[in-house]
Image 1 (cartoon, helix red, strand yellow):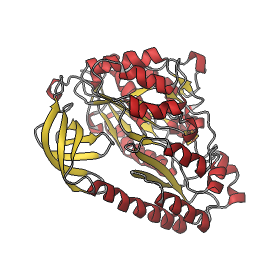
Image 2: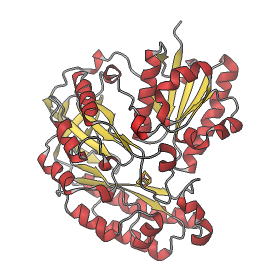
Image 3: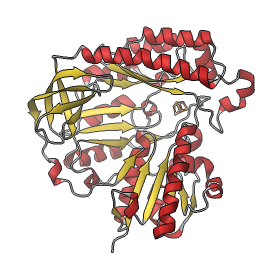
Length: 443
Ligand code: SF4
């Protein structure tokens, strides 16, 4: 009987993409995907280290999987950023884990699943080979992630990513274009080019040129990318928004804070004026989203007020805001005593102020669309995304991959709701033709 694996994914799109590559490596080695951990012979947890809470979730999940191991001998592996950060220490804390692998060793998962062990050394940039996607596992999906680069050469003082993902390595442009073409041939209609700092891409051309090359793949309908650093936003990339019709009008450009003094402590390498100059160059139809950290070390009430003021006058479509979480191996940790921690209740209150400000604005922006028709790419029955990346729920019979027009009737901060008005373009490969779906869950 074929052995079955289950992958539990925490964190960002890079992790979702890595989970898909690990699933493909297991399929090639003869494993079969399963939708529930209970029936799995192997449970692989792909982890996130960006916040302490994400790490806590790993250990609570491992507690549950430990019982499975006791009941049916399930093998347990830990991958991703916590694996990279903790290495052997993870096995000391959770000795029932069979193997640990860092993000540079995705293709070794079948071998480690058999033999156990630890693989967390970074591979030299010039020797690193990006794992190739198997387009068949994306058949029946409307969207796919395509890795453009990995790692980060910045040293933002709050961020553990340079430690867990290593230095920047860009994937050769020809390889990316070939992967996109193969995904489109399998029925995918939208690709998101991903990397920790994707707009610093340097894999044979500029990032803007990469977008143009991807757009030249016959049949590609939509292109997105994430995540970007403000200092790597080139005028050439800005021009792509108006010149490349497949590039969707959505830009996630994390600012992290609205006060220059906090940005300096965060080592973000720009001021608010620099950031504002850059976003002012974007075409007005581009929906801008951002990340904000509340309660960073030493954040004063005045800095928080500057943050709110900046957010009030910046027309963000949406915000992803978080409490600062001290991370090992980061510059900020070394300055903790000097800068001082913000009391938790104060940080929570500031986060709530930021979130309620944005909730009201997102709701207002969504309400402005009531009565409009928006173009939606269907990702699931009755669900899809607008060009601006808004979630849209609708009543209608469109299939996954169809491009439809939805008449918006209701709006909440989380989504637009409406009725399918017409099908603009039918998908060539409907969901019923889906063959080998990977069991990858997020949480
Ligand atoms: S740019 Fe800064 S926040 Fe983003 S991954 Fe690199 S170090 Fe982390």
